[in-house]
Length: 185
Picture 1: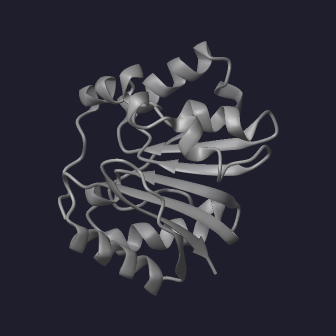
Picture 2 (picture 1 turned 135 degrees about the vertical axis):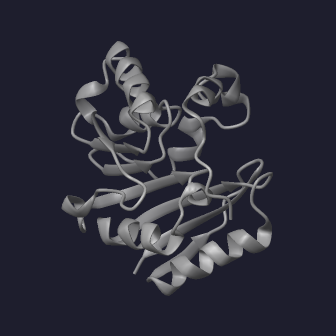
């Protein structure tokens, strides 16, 4: 898999409202996210999914938004503040060797990894941190772009996740992606 990080300036294209024609965040996430949940989104970019997640978790919920690039998170902060959602969102900059979520062990209800695993240098360690953060029965929605990632590479990622204790629950159909819904045993 490639380990190139999406350039920060591309984030502007990824938050373009036209993208909702392909990926409607509310429709995509509503089956998995409820009010009051703690949600983890790693590789959030400028917040295409973050703001809808914040609306879905409601005032009692929390979205922990992690990205490697501080410029991306500044854009999330600006957009979330304008939308009146910043109080539901916690922004964290991670580094290339750790997601930086040790304090979330067994506290996360739902994690979204949308087009991010192929960007990390060590997928096993990355997925282990995600697994540790999820509560028992917690759900991970994993989607990788089929234009960048082969079916075989995605199968390898799933095999790694399963070796860490994830179980495949479903295979949602998300346009232009290889995707899987995983649950922590």
